[in-house]
Structures are given as C-alpha cells and as structure tokens.
Image 1: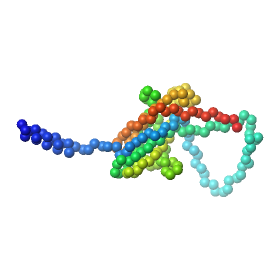
Image 2: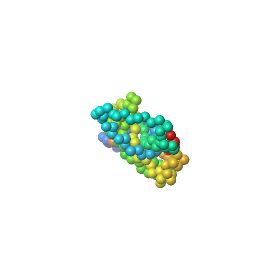
Image 3: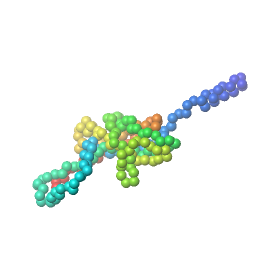
Image 4: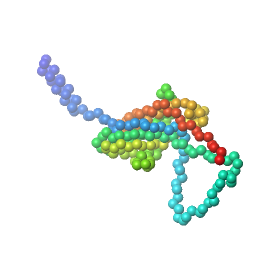
Length: 194
C-alpha cells in the first residue's frame, strides 16, 4: 500500500512538471484617467508652405459683429493607461473592448478605441502599441463618444450622472480587465460672446 501511494505521488509530481506553464500577464495595466466628452474630427493636415503666407489684417474687437459668439472647442473622449512591463521580452498591446457602464455596473454601450499615443518627454506622439521589456509607458487612446442623446437626453445633461469605464487590454497573449469608477463627463463650456 505504501509503495502504491509513493508511486501515485511520483506520478502526480511528474504530471505537474510536464504540464505547460500557465500564461502570466506580461505587464501591469492601470486605467489612470478617463475623459467622457465628444468625438472630435481629426485636425486637418497642415500644408507645407512653399512661399511666405500673405499677411491678413488683424481684427480688433470693434470690427466684430455685435453679438458674435465663438464656437467652443471640441473635447475628445479619451482614456489614459499606465503600462509597466513585467516580462522579459517585448509584447504587443491591443485594446480589445471598451465598455461604458452606469454607476451600478450595468453595461450601457461599447466605445471604440483609436489613435494610440505614448507620452514622451513633454508630449504625446504616435505609438506602435509595442511594450518593450522592462519599460513603463503612459499611453492615451481617443475613444468614440457615448451616445449622449440616448444616455442623458443630450450632451448638456451628461455631467449630471456618474459612469464607469471597463477596458479589456491584451498584452502579449494575456488579457486583463481594468475599471475606472465615478467618472463624471466633462461639463460643456457655453459659447461666450466676443
């Protein structure tokens, strides 16, 4: 009986050592910031001037029409992730899913991530979604805007509610879900007379 038990222990030990190791995340992922706002059009490409631009006369407040208003700037819906490599090799990063939830955790909509950028020195630059071994990088993705008409009866009412964002990120072959809670959408700035 004792030999049988010893044989089972040896076999169990061999089986465990022959099994494929479980996949571990190649990075620590943190959802550090979320901005719920609008979906802004891409800025137009700046043409390279071939000659000096013509001077345009400057406008003074007196030559503007009375009651003229300036349009508010577009505030892009976005998220920022902090990625810290824990692997020994570089890994591809992919945002697989971005879910907007209500304050209680019910999924309301799925948003689309685009335009990955990494923070380098003092500005965000285009990012190839490659996380180098041992690196720490702060990245930002533009997101499609929530359907404010459906959720809050218009963008002007959005700041009166609280939301959550749940993001599924794949680093290498390991998926992780990260969540940010208590997100208040950015309040719209009213148009100001000039």
